[in-house]
Image 1 (cartoon, helix red, strand yellow):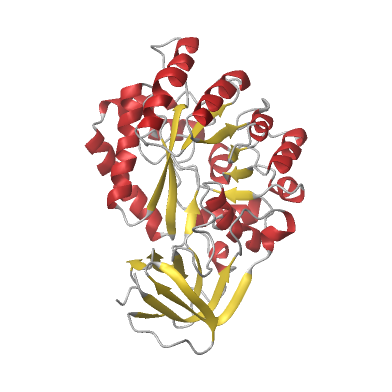
Image 2 (cartoon, one colour):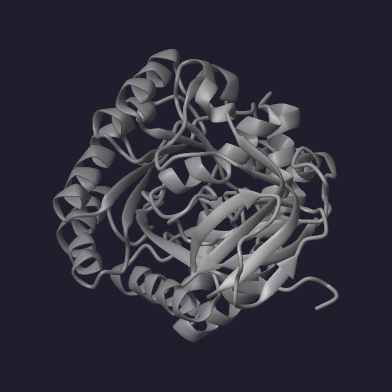
Length: 405
């Protein structure tokens, strides 16, 4: 919980306790020959040159680069089974429709809570090893009260045992279960499932898949308004497969985030900018589905704060590497390295209502940091597909140790 990190060749961080938009998204603080002093799991002091006297363990970075811990604001990491055959079919040219969700629903329903915990644990630890210290995890592969609660309880157990922070999101509105009529399932979500989830404190957010073939804007509004009355934050899977006006809905409801946005309209972009909703972009999904990439430049230039996530899931995006997403964002979304770093730290934290606590290296914030085996932060997206993490600190404790320790 107490640690002095010195010998930092380059300390790079966004600044502030709110999402950064427009030009501010690329404004970073860069300190060379820096140190960070940690007390009680929080950042006590930051500086350059000679560090103050410190009694406690010391980590010498020997000129390496340090950034805030990465935040993955959109995953579906708790599930059973896989969809390898669907992956191979898409490689042969078959179009993704979202129907494969039910393959995962069947496997997840058949798994016990303990099995879900054991399956998810190594996935999340692999993310930690790549510098991710906070992860949002959605339910949504149960589509019944008992199975959704089972997934959320598994997320809670994982958060109690893993050396990383998990943010649970209830996404019972991921698809419509075949055994229940559409109207009846929406009623179940609003009148039975959401009240239990909120009462038991199993989720911080509610998310709805508002898209072609899934939940309409009217259905999504009903579910999200019920969630808000119960004290849950709001998220929207918005305009991924087609334009349906989901971004406008997210802005109208003042949702914390609108996610995907591959087919967002210009009106939707302007609405998000006015409402301050964070756009969580998921270029890994577009990459794997061979779909158009989300319009990151239009969003940034309109003043929408942009975050980046993996969308790690067994169907449309079996990709759990946030550093690889950083590379895609530079190469395919036209984002600068500075914008990308803010997108996976402070803006991602803001999309989870955590920017007051994490997302930047500043005195008073939680001491979540990554030491990268590079000299400059621009190398992180440049060295594609390589794990450049040298050490990870979560709440002031080393959780991924340097190779020589």
